[in-house]
Image 1: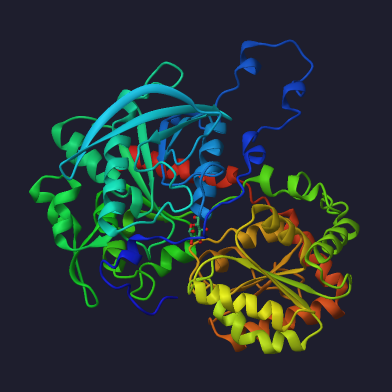
Image 2: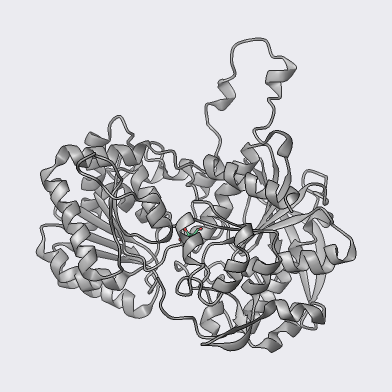
Length: 554
Ligand code: GLC
């Protein structure tokens, strides 16, 4: 858990340097969530009105839902938020809701059509124009907001000076809250009938505030609600109190934004205002929902979170099963890799391991445990704990693969390990979707020593791929990786209670011992991990309950 509060309104607070940039955009994998066989799988009996139009899973709760986020995979992604924005809406649409995603247009996305709709907004006295592009994919309306401010930002979504970043977020939220009135999707605007917005992280936390200030305070959009999802509370949109002039709200709204904490003193805090104003708040695991109520985990917002406890719920993210299911993963189809499933992983996963060893130029040996780390190179992800443990790790008969980008000093450190222990260690500094998939499928063990981890997706991807996670028991890692119990043969991996190198070594040592000496237990761990239903469908149902509560429970 973080022990220090972030400094007040440093530009780095607004500069959310998540996992570098997405250099390889994988359009194929996102283009089709539907079962390819579905078109042919209609039951062989005369169609009646009922089976032609089955009732929606959402039943009477069918809603119009607009999810707003600063990134959405596969078009833009710096981390898990992009994955969530790409996948949750499709799962909600499968339940029968009408769902739109609004995201900035950072580049040219060939599948999206220009709607030719221009609108101007005044941001800090300056006229800013936006225009909209639209694509309908897997039952979801993806609306891309074009503006000179977003263009070509794909590699640096959260970059720039504090005020510039703030202006971008203000523009995005001001325009997004109007979208139900001005952007027709399939010819018809969403309007405010049965509408709920889902905003994500501080970047879109102004949307609930604008919904209230511009509409609901004026008796408009009376039945529209907003839900704010916390993916990472460490980034909050902090600034000096004078930043209030940029957000364009009535004076009496200032108090919502003002926050005092011992490190920053009195300051302006966008997440604070969004959390207070949203009708419901979700965070991405139960463990994190608990942690953000503590002074260590709330990064200064814990009192607001505690006051909002009645409207807070933890929902663990799902994963996109077209993308991360080793049975169909497109990154396992060439270069010696192979798709595999629960039925054949014992013979096929070793092929992926050999292909990975070959691709990385490591000795090709099936018996050597291969350990992976994939993540942003920063304090949160605990890569420095791996560094502390490295003398012990390389004293073992193991291979270690590290993939990530981030802090320059940590990137250097990874490169140093690669050259220093070249017979055992490979570092891939950069971000490659393909390598992330291949490492996840090829290694035996995935290390996640994150100091804090709101949900974490890599441990879920690992388990889907028969790779055993060794994790710091925190946030979503605690929720999803149940410690292995050798007596009852239960659990999914190894956990350690404190983010310290010796704890990591201890957990990893136990894991290696099981790998080497208790093969049946190992296969049991793999099998249990792979058998879980980690799809978005469960999570979407829980989100639906929150949206319903936002609409009807007061
Ligand atoms: C953030 C969190 C990560 C979570 C992701 C998606 O990146 O750090 O733990 O999985 O958001 O919710």
